[in-house]
Structure formats: C-alpha cells, structure tokens
Length: 214
Image (tube, rainbow, N blue to C red; front, side, top):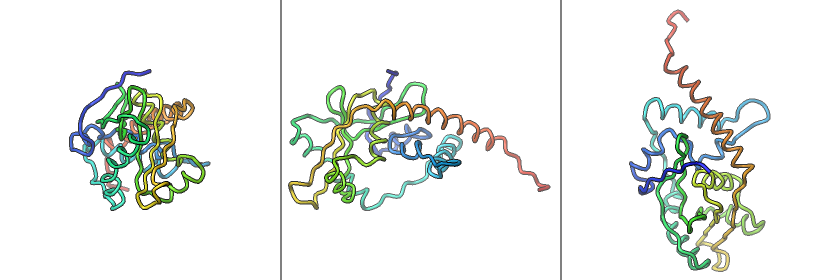
C-alpha cells in the first residue's frame, strides 16, 4: 500500500480544480488505458496533450457542462440516500485523494466505512437498463472504479446506477466491485508511461525554436 494524501475540499470548487491540475484522474481512466492494435489511441494522445498543457501553462480549459451532467449532479444526493436506505449503511461525502509522489487523483462520490466507496451514475438510461439486463458495470466505469480503489487504498466500491424515469422497482441498480489487481497494475504501468510521455513532450515544447528558414 502507498501513502495516501487527502484534502477535504468540496468537489467542483476552484480549490478542488486546482488540486486536480495536471494530474491523471479516475474519471479519465478510460483515456489512460485506451489502446489500439497499431500505434497510439487518439483518446490517450489527446489526454497526454491536455495534461501537458495544464502542467506547462497552468491553464485549465473550461469544461462544457451538458444538461445530463447537471442532472446527474443534482440527483446524486437522491441516489446516495436511496443507496443508504436500501443497504442500511451510512455514506459520507469526500474531497480529493492523491498518492504521495505521483500525479494522480481520485474523488469518489461517497465513502462507506473504512474500506468502501460508491460511484453514482444518474439517468444514463441506456447503461442503466443494460446493467439491469446483464448484471454488469459498463467497462469505462469499471476502469474508473479500479482507479479510485488504487488511489484511495480501499477494498471495494458499490456501483450505483439510478434512473428516476424507470419503474419504481427498477430505479436503483447496485453492483459490488472488488479490487482487481490486474487492472490496477495496468493503471500503474500506464500512468508511468504517461509520465514519461509528458516529460518528453514538455521538453520538446519548452525548448522549441521556430526555424524561420523552413
């Protein structure tokens, strides 16, 4: 287990965003792990460029917030309450976790006891229905959860999908996800590769000189 740093700041605030600046985050795990058969995946390349820009300039592009994202934020508390009522557990909001000496961070939706987390997704009805049908967590969210478990040193996470437009019996889906050391090891290796790639890109950009003769 590694040394975990925790900052008790409200998620979404400027202070929280500043702590995330230039760091690989759990919400972008799918971009970090993106691969193609030959060459690099576009999602990985774009993420690498984004992180490099943030580290060099300290500039963070404004994030476009969709109506679905707004709804998800507004409904998250309802979903967390329903989870607590269904499971009989107490959940707690949290700030941001980082690993000492690494540029990675995670901000779980809620904490459960000393070992658990919950990750809440609201009104993504296609994923919600599919999870109910096959009993599985969408791959990108599974990767996000494993990133959170890695950074926080916790043991499990309950994936919580909530859809208030569904019939009452099918509004809530809960799936327990345990630590997957194979995926976590892959995240560790990919994060090391990302650091190497960012270092090379930073060196190229900061030493660049325009060749006026070209």
